[in-house]
Structure formats: C-alpha cells, structure tokens
Length: 286
Image 1 (cartoon, helix red, strand yellow):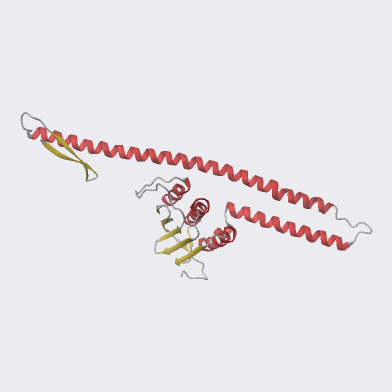
Image 2 (tube, rainbow, N blue to C red):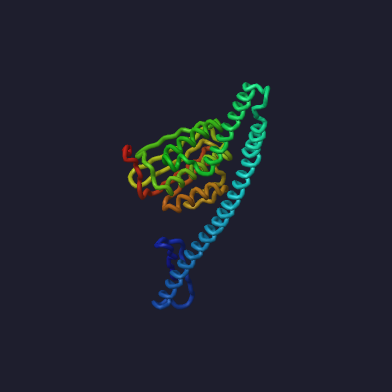
C-alpha cells in the first residue's frame, strides 16, 4: 500500500491510496504515484479556479446588465420628471405671463398677485431641478468633499424616510481623491437604499473613519438580515446591490466584508487605501 497526500497551495485536501496484492512497490512505482498525486492536486486547484472564474464572469454579466438597465431606467425617469413636471409648469408660467398686459382699467394689484404666484411656482421648479441634479451627482461632493456630502445626504434621507440614522465621523476631515470620495458616496447610497427597500430596519449606524493611509466606511442596521448568506470569503448574495458594493471597493484596491444573520441585521465594512488627501490652505486636518 502507498498513501500520498493530495496538496493544493501547500494544504492537504485529500489522500491518495494505492493497493496491490502482488509484489511490493519499488522506488520507481512510488515516484510515479507521488507524481500522479501532485498532478491530481494541480487539477483540482485548476478546477476550483475555473469555477471561481465562471462565477465572477456570471456576476460581471449580471452587473453589466444591471448597469445598462439602471442607466435606461434613470434616463426614462429623468425624461418623465422633466416632461411631466418641470416642462409643463414652465409652459403654464409662460402662458400666464402672456396674459399680464398693462391694459386700460387693469388693476396693478392683480398683476402683483399673479406675479407673486408665478414666483412661488418658479421657486418650486428650481427646487425640483436641484433635486434632479443632486440625484445625478451631488454638487456638494465636488465642492466641499465627502464628509459634507454624507452629512447632507443622511439628513435629507432621515427627513424623507423618517429612519433614524446615527452618523459618526472619526479621524482626518480632509477632501480625499475624487475617485475614493465618489466610491464611498455611491456605496453609502446603495447600502442605505438596500436598507430602505429590504431590511425593514428601525435604526442604522454609519461610521466613516479616515486614519493613516486608509479610510473605512461601516454601515450597520438592525433589520431582517440576509437570508442564506454564507460566511465564506466570497458569499453569494441574493441582491446585486451588495455585489456592486464589493466590486466598487475592489476596483480601488480595497476590501469589502458583508456579515449578516437572519433577524439580526447586516453590517457592511469597506476599507479603501488613500493615495492623497487634499486640505484647504486655511484649514487643518483634524
């Protein structure tokens, strides 16, 4: 009998046993058996890598499909918002302005009332345009950086959805590289959208920490959790939003860990390395 380990990355994943009832194995036989064992380990590792590659390719196709669908849905929503809301209101304002003429006998006070009404309508449409622009890309993120953008977004979400969100910010309060900032902001948007749509949570905690050469973002909720989640390094999540969060972090050389238990909420941990921090000359990083 010859027993030889089947190795994969220097770890034993099985045992190969070879028996024969006649003569004992000589040295050449043993070397051949060990060579077969090594080849078996390599084949099993290659099969595992191929399976992982197929899973990543399938996930990539899903994410690309989601991206295309999201783009078209966003364009459709934007066109509907502009056509059914803002454009109709502006046309109505235009017609009402045509009726304001200094004809004899007209009461100027009525003009003032009509102009005041039109001013209010214009103000509402300006706010609507600002909302649409903020959804496309928050200007505050480009002008003031990640922290003010997160604070503004969290406050607005609490007012709209009545969901208590605890926000904690630690470390240096500087502007980061634009790619890092937009990545963190979109991850936060995706995570909180998932909480609102699926988690049925009553409270959420968001923690942003910028220390040394890395920044971390943690989103925790007390919701229903993720069903059938796996503790493995590459769990299979039922929603593409969580997969897109992981891909965003990986694109910048970061890591993303999502832990969840049914009925006990979900935690999303994202860490991304920082290449540079941009501080204003009249302020100091705290």
